[in-house]
Image (tube, rainbow over all chains, first blue to last red; front, side):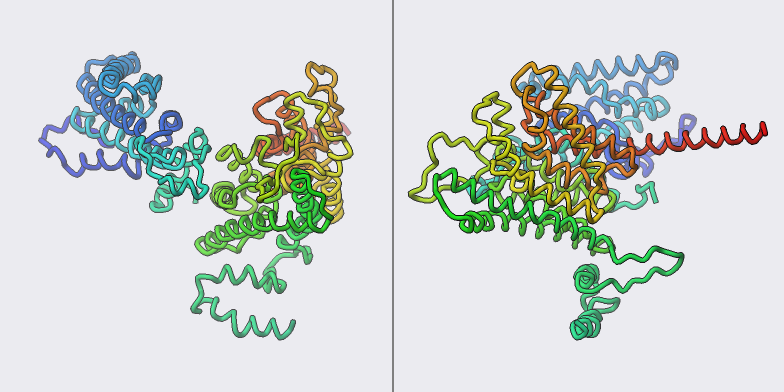
Length: 220
Length: 394
């Protein structure tokens, strides 16, 4: 990504370059399916769609704000201690998110338990702060944060969708597979609830994505 | 034969070749054509060993080796069923009952697996892989007879796609596909793959009832509860008149299959023997410690219970997922034996350990090979250096 620190000329808010910041992480630069980051949380919290959704929104919030804050501070942060500053910013935001969750969606917050706190260690966030926010202006940084978090989010939601559908027969807690199907002998797939199946689902997503976009296949 | 060949060549084949109406299905046609006739493909250059055996024929040897197990399994399914309801029937009735219960499992496993194979062969334009002939036969043999058919289909499709096709098809898989199907069933639908109620077909018709004291537990489950009195005798376990998965119960039939495999050179005797050695070694070790009753049983008991013999002969010897090097095969097999007994005796969550042990060692097989090959290179380099030193000094 080219740096435009010295660029005095005013740029449109949604210039093509800025649009790319938002759209690239959704597809060919996806943090999970292409960069293979943040896998641990995908395994842990995608058993249900609801937890996946809340997690995705939380990460969007944390990442958007963290990128903006670090970008604003980028000229004052001494390079030697930048990691610890980044961590402090992320941790503060995560605490905020955690408090909001506890206040408004207490049940989900209990289900997510430690994994809200573990957003701090989500390597996607640190990675974007290091790679992008430290060198760019607040607005592009914000877009980059939102884009990457959304790229993380849709994978999370897809995995959560299939795991809840086949593992519990429900979506967002509501039963979607009718009782008549169960009476015919259908049973929920217990394997879907176990973490290995999340990994396999992510693998299938990667497979489909690379099948559609051949440029991602790095082995000939 | 000649007439049939002419018919296929002139009337059927053109439709499937380039430009034909059914061009898309060429790979499916090819698969059936090579069933009937020797493939028309000839090696174009270089010298090769001429041999009539190809993968299809190799796989057929395994199928033949599976026949004793299959037949005994069918008989045992019937036998166990009639024992459970306390009916005395003759040999033929038992066999027919088992036949009716087992054949649907085989059909479903073949149909679903081959469908996936044919679809992938058409999409990716490679030959239909014959490896599934064996996998499709193994799957019904390693599951309980009461497994619902749709579960068998789901597991088979999963095993073929995730276990084999994503890695590039037959010969590229890391794990044994048949065992992967079983592992999938085991974790996805545990109620149908474990416990005491699944091993014997007990769907009763009117007027039938289970005999008093019926348990349906496999010997391993009996042992896990520490109830030594109700364990079947060693002879019963050796012949195989015990509850269990369809094909795994009879050590005699399995030995017969092993004989066929070894005689035709398809199965590796090294792996079979080293699995055996690993099991006996660990059994003796347990005897030495013997802190509970399970640990005190003679080691040979372990070899005739559960899936040990079946796994050692048909599963561990899978030429793709096993170690390739000679020394590697000994290590691989030995560790399978050891881990199986460890899981059986020490881990209370799983009464049987053969499946997990083989899958586990499948994952490690490439690593074992890597170090065996590395050690060999080192040894030979050392020899070369010695030779050079000698030549320099002379």
